[in-house]
Length: 230
Image (cartoon, rainbow, N blue to C red):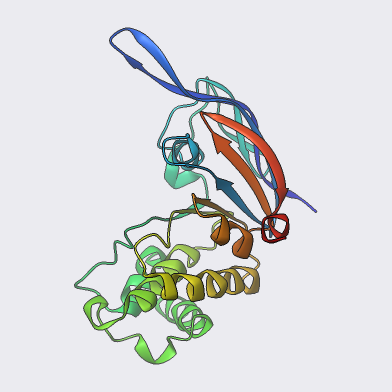
């Protein structure tokens, strides 16, 4: 199976008052295409910073990040975020309130012909059980429905890699448990490679094929998601 994402000895950090502060040190990871990975660990451990570096929003001080066969970040390379074929989904769904669900999903498909765009939007809304909700506005949708719209909006351009940063944290416990399973099913049905950031072991166990523990700026281990549930 081909490799979708590879981190090779990645170092991340920032300058403050002429001192360099390390945030992530020597992180290495391989994620195969079609699999769901997870960066699991406490707040402040560096996992979201690592996700932002993969997306192109944090500079790499040393090491390399590859998406597919292409180096997208190193000490000398920094490919722009919009050229990395990466989809993003964060805690705040950031749906456009003045656009319908269908228009939100199709927002990143404006270069496609109208018929092709409409067909892709209809396909994705059907995938998440919202085929009849395309003309509703975000305020007319439940929190879970808004999340599903945000998810398929990120999937719409067919990114090589989807990054999810604590996407369930704003939901109540019952909705969160249900949607973790649903999102996993949706991603696998789409054959989408994804990397999730969470501090919640139950989410990691339910959703991820492989889990990397991150703490104190170190990526310590990689294990099957099923091992967390054992």
